[in-house]
Length: 71
Image (cartoon, rainbow, N blue to C red; front, top):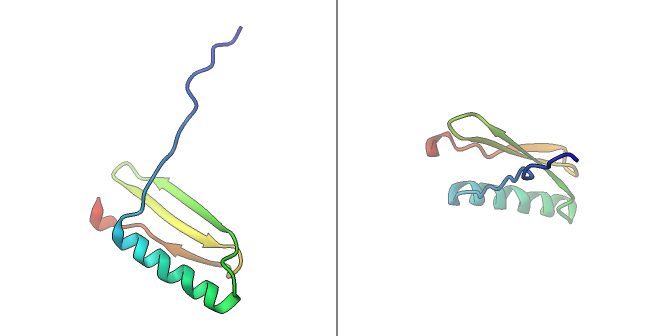
C-alpha cells in the first residue's frame, strides 16, 4: 500500500496596489468587449517574492502585477 503525503496548497492575495491595478485593467476589458472573459493567472515563486501576472483570454493581453517594492 502506497502512503500518500499531503496535497500541495497554493494561496496568495493581491496587495492594495496590485488590486487597484487589476480592477482598472479588468474594467477596461469589460468596457471594450462587454464582458470580462476568462483569465489565466501565473504565479512564479522567485525565492524572495512572487511574480504574478494575469492573461486575458478575451483581449489577448497580459498584465504584470509583480510588486518588487513589497519584497
